[in-house]
Length: 330
Image (cartoon, rainbow, N blue to C red):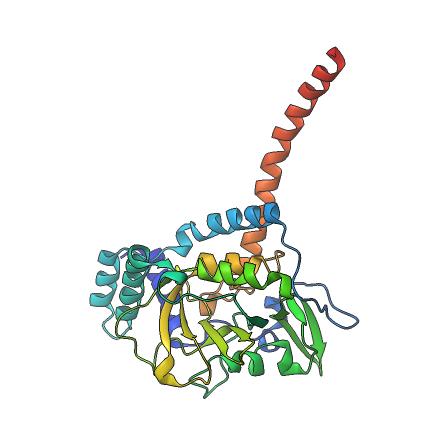
């Protein structure tokens, strides 16, 4: 048996069976990564101006991170071997998720082809992001407005538009970060709706409403002039998956009969959120915790980005003298 394979599968099983991340307020001090402390009120803004060049580099580094061996499932043969040797472990769930990865690549199409979103008559767009926080003990289902009420800056009484995606704030001796509330300005409504329409999606067959997409950590709420509200709830990322479990409700109230269960491209959602804040990709782990199978993916992403920048500097340095010589000859 490949011990690295077994360790990888064990870490994935921990993610299936127990909360895969710990709230920052519950992390031991030794596992926290240093971040800039906010002395005054946290930042409030509608959305950061999009820097397409920066976003492209961020996503290139993200692609490299997602292509590492640690982000890949074992082969079906290896998973079957693990299932035979560990019949009490829930290896079947990992096999199912790996199969979903492959099926998603085959069936995913732009969202506009299955559940088109109109940009006509939009009066407001709000995005609530709750990070990788685990659910409290005893909480089974968290969807849509639960992100706003339990995992956004609203939870700790901060004003609308507070962005703690990178920054952190202390409230009553507890530290909060990796959450944000974005209020888009009207001039960005059409752009955001268009980006949503191009997110790759797969309306997967035979969803089980009591089990599928029950841990939302991203909530998009779009309101129209006629009072209608369109809602998107997205699960937190599961390790090694290329998709996110989600529910779309074309019109509130949130009647379960109106739920549209879809898988959404993880990359497309990360890219969508980069156009709201391009400082760091969403849905990356921020802690190291070997006992939970966690690695600080945000740190890994930053290291990849820094290595990319260092690799380009020598190339730029070699090109500069040549340009200078041509200018002298003139």
